[in-house]
Length: 448
Image (cartoon, rainbow, N blue to C red; front, side):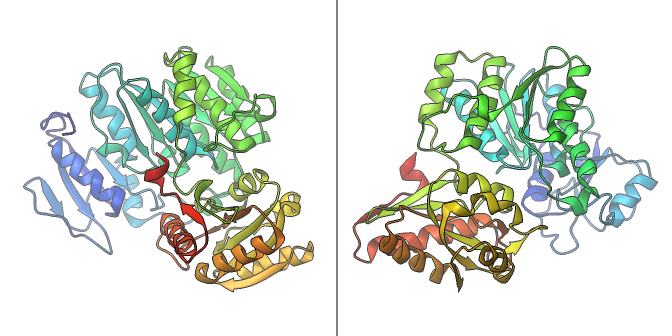
């Protein structure tokens, strides 16, 4: 049960463009709240019949309350989708489902707090960690957005409830009234520049996370890059409380699920936000110690003959992979897939952590060229099926304690998603353990 009234949005009309996992959930939630919905997807428009639902191309948006575009559909750059152009021509707002959730919660009379988490890297771990702390402390809590559950599929929470929404730059561009009681911007490095034009456009999109905040709200901002430092100054000038997050100045947190400097930053952000919204320090400590870690993010999935297998499949760009490489002194590194702009050039400070590299996927040659130029031994493996056992054998010979999958690349050349890639890695590790070596395989459920 969502908890929202089935007549909450009666009389409102919404257009939904894009019917993937997010768009389909949005349609269902809107219908459950009594709205009229017209939905369309150029590739898939298979929805169950409903008296308030029209499945048809979006050729006229007049009278619509708003257009909800799935996050992957551009409304400006690199080229606006025709439905987005139509919405602008007919003066119809283009909104994200997080905006509609906020409006629905407030229209329902709930004063539940909203926490928004963004950044190029680390936002999923921080979102999951914040939600875990509030849940362990007994506060009603729901997490989603860019992480997992679509925002509008989250249930109605009471006044003391907390929504933790992971927000991509795509979602942030499509907010209007959304007001976070606490918002976090962890870091900014080049990403999604095709959608935002340049770093200035990307930073401006991320800065929307602080829109509508006031002196009673808290902004937590990382200090690792000039873009974030500039945004912190601007937000403080508006009278919002700002916590500047310097990972090097934070005390290290010892926990197997949160290794590395970057996780010290994630913990620091979580602590500041949890305290701002009423959790006591002992409640925060209890939650941190029981956090199981995020699946596919520095997740230890197996150990065999003294070698740990680490699934960091969520590292789909070089910046994310740098966090993993910095977390271990020496690794056998499995990487590759579809490289992002710039490849892995900015990983050179971490190449001395790589004993050998085992490359897979479409752009393996691109990565190999960079690694070879810096003297890192490279093995062209092509697939995970070959890379994992090859890396394991090499780790045994060289007594290297870690086989790390941290691809620094997108997954869609060989897999459906980074989750699919990580699950495939886990299966291969499980086969290695079962092949006669001593060891254990740890699924996420077992780690919980």
